[in-house]
Amino acid sequence: MKYAVRVGKYIALLLLMVCMARILTLGDSLSLQGDMILYTMTTGGLRPETLKEMRTQDETLEEYIPFTASGSYGQQTVSNKDLAREITAGVVLVDGDSSLLIRSEGELLKEDVTGCLLSSEAAWQLFGETGVAGGQVVVGKIPLNVRGIFESEENIVLVPAAVFLKTETKQQENAEEDAASEEEENAFVYDKLAMKPDLSPALRLENVRAFENRWSLGAEKTDCLIYDRLSVFLVWLVPAAALILILAMAVARIWQNRRFPFRLLLYILALIIFLFVFRLICGQRFSFPVDLIPSRWSDFDFWGETLTTFKSSMAHILFMDKSDYELSYYKPLSALAAWALGGLACFLLSWRLFRMEEDQPLLPVLIVVCLVEFAALYLTGSTPGFGRQKALLIYFCPWWLIGKYLFKKH
Image 1 (spheres, rainbow, N blue to C red):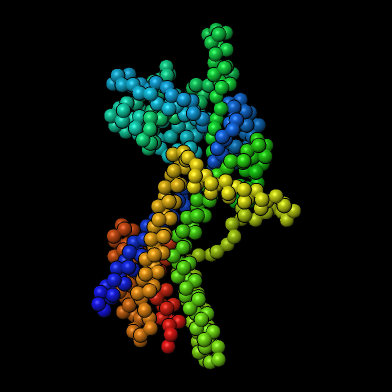
Image 2: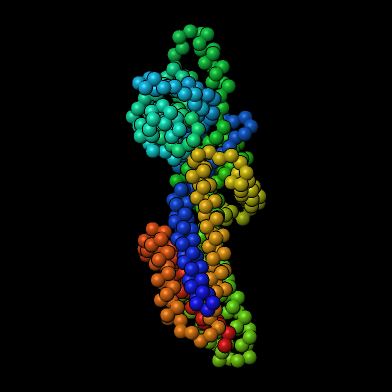
């Protein structure tokens, strides 16, 4: 039984390190997503002429916060004339670069009026494969070149809005066609707008708020910074739990030995060293996000607006339907949450199994722990580096074991 417990605690430790490796990998992927801002307009939407006015009047502002609008155009016939294949697909009209709406192999640029993007399902049905960039399809009656493919199990095609919507330079063959085209344009609205401000946090907040105020946006907004902040919280869930337990143990030992000056001094010194080593290993500087600080003290609406945005973003994350681009945030975040809870359970189990009450030497335990950590790295396909997160992964268990060793009962 004694040997089974010894083996079990290292198995729990191995599972913990596998969870930590997955947590750090998913956290890295989310931090690289960027800080998109998504507006979902469920009532009214943006009319094409409004969007055109936005681009004309905010031409300077758009250099700092480029935006892309999209809207559903309903079902259209999409065909591959070369292979004599035809499907019915949902058409999404895009005004702006597709990279702000969806992740794809290939991109539909803002100036492109002859291209389109196909979903992987539509590509399979039309071409029998997904490597079809450069091919041609006919959407409705308009031939378009395939610029790339995005992952989706539904038949969807992304088309430049200028292809289907009437512009001022477009000539109509007769008045009847012109009236029909104008009626069609007036019936269409963009139901989603996405922007990606390439600014410092302070300028980002200022410019985005100016843009929202001018065009009455922001009522249903998802600031994707919340994904990054939730990922940071989940990445630090296990380390924070370990740190809190060590601090609680240290405070308890200090309180128990308050009448013994020499022991009290030793425990205080041990706590200072432990916190210093923890900060040195993790390399993390904790600071309050700049965009959560009002630019001036008299901005009394700041916290109310911030809280409203947070509630709206959380409701969107938890309950609302998400676009393919938003799923690229949501899927790794939900996986990260699952791994973080699993890692926390493994940590509490290993914390329970690693008893430091007896006078056992610390060095052999640390050597075995390091071997377990490298085994976890091998199993997860990760390679150790010199960054903060990899350092946290490599040295995670030794420092909490050292903490238990320093503040064990005598």
